Image 1 (tube, rainbow, N blue to C red):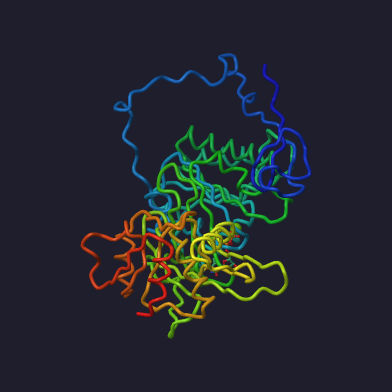
Image 2: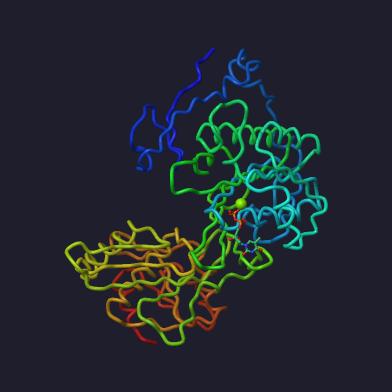
Length: 455
Ligand code: TYD
Ligand code: MG
């Protein structure tokens, strides 16, 4: 019989190392590696004799049963992030900072789901009374929702089986423990093993399982990233501190588009969906301000208008700072190098700060040109016209490359009253866009010329 595999797993990123080290080789965090013994193969002795899993029949694609209907979580936003509703037998991880609204979202969704199928909400964080009070305060007509304050994975699964639950919520995965491992709840071993058992249950029984996970800065409990590879769908909450908007982003989804986002607002009555979030992230300055540029991104399956801000200021000291919030800092450095090489504009004596308004993270390359435009606008103290949008990828050779769904982005901007666009040539629709003047650019110098026009 094979010996259980022993590895060292990082509690922050889930990376593995064969021996203990002070620093995680994958993410560079210190003191996050802890020993983990993988018993997942040895825990099924009956199957081991046949050399792994039980033999599975070969099936033709055409013979497969029709996929079952997806259940609705009660909000269009959450349904869309899941890929169009909840799939039977799916395992979904939902991570985020403490207090951001994970329990609120899942409680509201559970109440809506409970009207369609049996739902069990297992809470290890709060008492049943607390959750019940919250449900009442939120006005959830959740008479059929079943709650259990339980931290044993085995007992939760037994309850779930007994009531034939079709949806099971674990709040949170860091508070539950399986008897199969001895380590404390929240440790890497416990998280992995409990996660694996719950996912296995989802696949075997067809129950849709949600695992809630707190993202932690300190390494005392393992973060949800340790579980990402186990589940079908990984969702993370994003928010600006102080903002009431909450974005739920699908970073991985076997049943829908990755990067799909759902937008919610935290209110007195819980999370309310924002059905048309296209323009909520614009500050809508009365007068044009330098360093602010509006772009249209496409997150998942819909376009959104987002404001990018930059502040370029003479550096204090010899080490200029490059700080980016909501955007990749390495990409800022790259864009500044392109700006120097291909437009002769040197910023090595300037601090450059970039911020994406509203706590949104821009991960697509269409934000390159807007970031450069915002930096230039700040450097020259020259505001961009308030009715101008900019998008496009910037290449190392100084070329402006097209991005997917150009026409759709332009139409969204036109719908919100933007009258002028600076975009890659290949993104301009042949017939143009009604009510919009479009400057098509292919090179950085053309883009800079178009951006410096004041009309
Ligand atoms: P919660 O869902 O408990 O966060 P998590 O499970 O991610 O830790 O949300 C808690 C926060 O949300 C708390 O600071 C209060 C706020 N909140 C509201 O503003 N309105 C509400 O109706 C609810 C239920 C919570
Ligand atoms: Mg909670």
